[in-house]
Image (cartoon, rainbow, N blue to C red):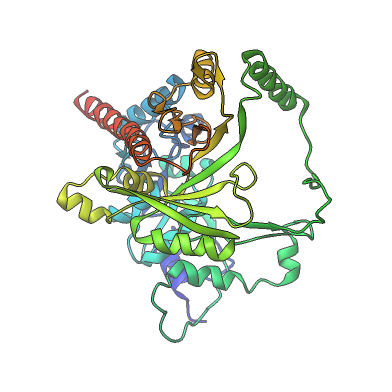
Length: 454
């Protein structure tokens, strides 16, 4: 039987199969062209040492990228990153520090994922290398350690289905649109394996924002609850939650922090309009308006619910994007904090904003009181509270969470403030978030330079 492309590529990278032809279903020993690990390199290192290895079988085969938790500036995470960098430099592997970019992006940009080769990575998204004609497949950490030590691992050649696409893609349709459409051919029984309740439906992840839209049908008089199914609430986790709420009450801020005001997603500049239109077509939201921040080469675009005027009942959805693509920013030396964020972390939710109840604590605005209480308990913020009561609006960004990389925003609108943001506030917040990312990049570059000198 003739070999398909996957089998032909695997054949080139098998070990000890000079006579036999590789076929789907075979278990083979492979020597991949490259193996990439990211932040989980820290978990692979002890497995590498545990099998008695002291050096890499082929240093040019190994790529280390730090990309998953780079906003975590805690001492613990920085120490972990430093240990990974020291190990990588000692072993002679290719190392890319935090801030250089997403690991898979690096694998493609730097030519590791080369057409006709077999590349593995300790990450489930490594099959994306297929877009370059490179056979990419995920591995677990133990396999990664074995490849470091021996240059090889085992693999079962997967079954292959041929899909022939006829015709020409319409303008604006990308490869990701095609594969998502193909996924739609799963039958109802296979979809039911998601075990979603019958009154809930979810969209596929957006190719522009990576967000998912969910729909739930319920009687008007039914409270917003859903069955936990097979889930449970752990007593230890619940006790921590209750303790956190008790701290808020003791600080006197529990009644001041109101529901979510808006959710903000950052997208690539070229996807700004289509991301907004996609969301409007999937939701009951309308385009409210935009703030063009020329100093930051960025725009903040606001959509709101057609059903409720108050964000407390239906949070606004905000999309932020650079005004020009990355290559233009690079050539013309334009600021690009938003585009840099997306290049480093992918299109994703950037921050969640909570409203603060309008009012004063003596001569102190509620938002200043809330932020001061939170600061005293260890949370850092990217800037001081901006805006004023006279302008009708005050806002602030927290530093990014070391657990989720999300920023928390607090916003207080005074009296009959007629608007959503002020342009100057948006400019200050965009600059503050961008400045933190720049500091992280500078820090990573400095640490890399120091290690090389050593």
